Length: 221
Image (cartoon, rainbow, N blue to C red):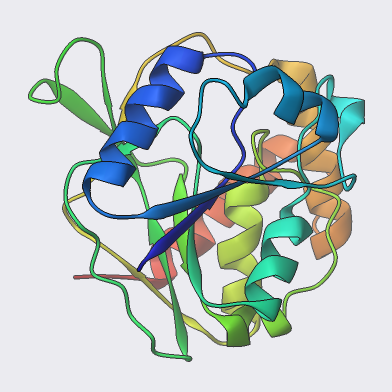
């Protein structure tokens, strides 16, 4: 059975339940990594396997789970989809076991119905990561649910000479809601991103550079 790794949040419950329903309908088993406190808050809403972790980025205002929690689980278990918790999947995703590549996925934003959507191309909400890639992945202080982690993964892939594949037509949908971050948190994660990758330290120029690097390397299918 294909598996989705995520981290459900105590906020935006309705959209996350809608996302989970879409995953279960397609047959995905789901694991959510959370703090013990968040598990107590949300377990009544999500019928999934919860795994407790204390590897958290609490400096961002909530119990955000660090990226390496997902990476380490894949290293010790199996290649998996990592998906933001409010992303609906409408069609089964074709996953590649090619150890020389990873897959990344953009989303379609919508307000009322899936039919009226706009592709969100400046960020990524899902990744299929292989055990081999995760074995080579470095330590990071970035967290899932805040900014820049979605650029870090493909930049690491580029530096490790992995191919980056992506669907030209996205099966991933996101119902619009109030942003879970502000400009200060965006700058905060941008500084971490820059320090870890050896970029200039200006979050605006670094983000633009990373975006261009990623877009140039994506192989669409």
